[in-house]
Every structure is written in structure tokens, then in C-alpha cells.
Image (cartoon, rainbow, N blue to C red; front, side, top):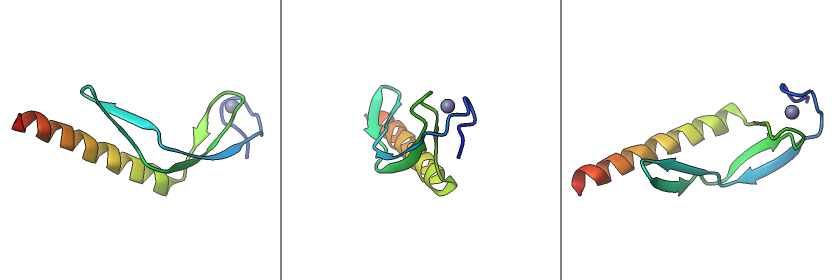
Length: 71
Ligand SMILES: [Zn+2]
């Protein structure tokens, strides 16, 4: 697989817990697996992984908004 940005073929399969922040609150999205092109930093993820990340981000922002309303 080639990088869509720079055409490099080197690829690292990697699992991370990337941080997400919303209204000053931060969390980590657990166990996000993807392929990273070290040449330019571009990364790709499975659709299933991307969907899970988006769901977690949405859930986190909802949680933050709820906390703000309560306090
Ligand atoms: Zn690249």
C-alpha cells in the first residue's frame, strides 16, 4: 500500500490511544489501530475503527456537555 500523500511505501502498523479534547476536557480513545506512513505522518484506519473512534468522540462530548449542565 502506498501513501496517498507522498507515495512512500513504508508503513508501520501501530496501536495507540490518541487523545481527544472537547471544551477543555481531555480523554484518550482506547486502542486505535492503524497504519502510519513515517515519511510524512499520514495514517490510515479501517472503516470499523474510524466508526468506533467517532462514536467514542461523540460519547465523550455528550458526557462533557452533561457535566457542564449538571454543575
Ligand atoms: Zn506520505
